[in-house]
Length: 354
Image 1: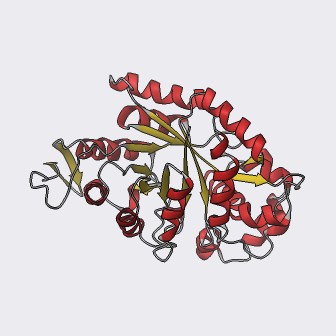
Image 2: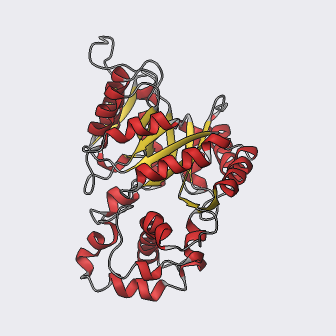
């Protein structure tokens, strides 16, 4: 099993990448949310300059905010700075789009975007529609002074539903997905990727699987909802609530079972904000802070429904089971100031025992 962390893009906190590298993490993924955080590629370039081993990449870069050639140029630049140590994680953009009051990219658009993106990463010529014109394009990298597509830059496709997971098999070198309790079983996720590959006539040789999750590492005897745990993972827990609030409002669906005990109270908090500005309220503290009134919503049940939870020993067993199921990399998100301590505690308590 490989281990990674997903951090919020912070141009003033580049030293954390060295910290993660020294602790033995395999990767650090950097969020791409342009209305909230530093630019992910600026942060990754600085991190590439001062690290030596760890793998780096956006986690995940957003289709709707950059055209495929722009993402590929950024990654090919990073590949010059850290050859063979970069990956491109790509997604439809829940937070990046919703902070602008927009919806993430639809599956059909995602499919077409990935077709172009993957071909450009391979150095191929591909037909590309920009506005009302279709033309063949390719990265003009014969002169290696500026950009490099070699060594190959792995493409991790983010997918949290079956159709998106199939696109990972159709176009990608790997899949980023959510595991239970809030996500999908490893075998099912990989099955969807294989189905997508089969339909495209691809063989998934060397295909990579990476789970994005939240981790609540408990001290011996510590309650699941202790003040320390709530302070550390509370923003992660609430990010799930924000996501489903948008889904319920836009699609007219019922909130999932695990959110029903707090749903009316959460809606009352959000709906103090005028509707036209509500997308500011729901996403501005993504993974970093809690709004007033939110800490009272978080209990042990909500934490267990959105995180891997346990002492170091218990988490080791959970990770080993995920590995037996075929998961290759576990990446957990964190945005609070305690991330330095959390990274060290997880490395000492879990990674060192694997």
